[in-house]
Image 1 (cartoon, rainbow, N blue to C red):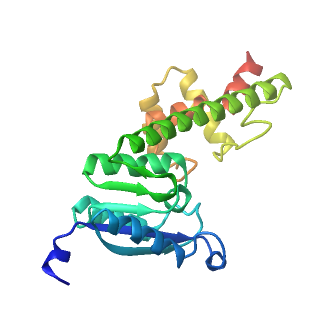
Image 2: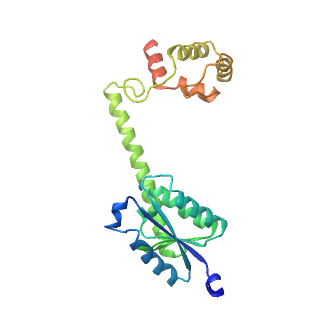
Image 3: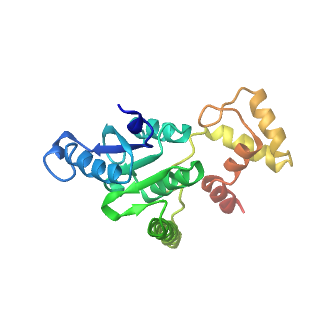
Length: 228
């Protein structure tokens, strides 16, 4: 490597396919590097290919995590990917990567959508992506609310008739309700449960917030309503 090449900033070319079958169609392991190398070298970078094979929903992505570590450390100055779905598992994941690029001072480029985090067009793209992510979050929240309202209209209590139920033994729940009815504080109830070596539903230790969660659970609320 010449001194001139060594002085060039380094771009990591992130290449990912979901399965080996993708090598025959779409952006394969063979086609992605060529596209990315052309874009990065034209921008004045020396390049290094980072290869990953795995499902797009896989949250592990060790190669991407290592690339992000190197970018944060300053060992590389740019991250290139062909498509959004090659790089990120969701819009929120993309925005997290873009936020890291902004905070840590490196460049994020996605060639298929001409997205460059250092340009006005790239910032506009990320702003729109953030708006769509927020819209999607609101839509999901509204859908869940409608589902719960529909259940309540049918007389179904979530956590009692349907959905996940507490794994705590009934006698433990009854003890918590009884202590609270006597005016015992959440902190003292938690201490009492710990003193009796009673684990939480997940096997952990009791805290006031854990006790409150039990008292506010649909199962307890439903029982109180029937008793009242």
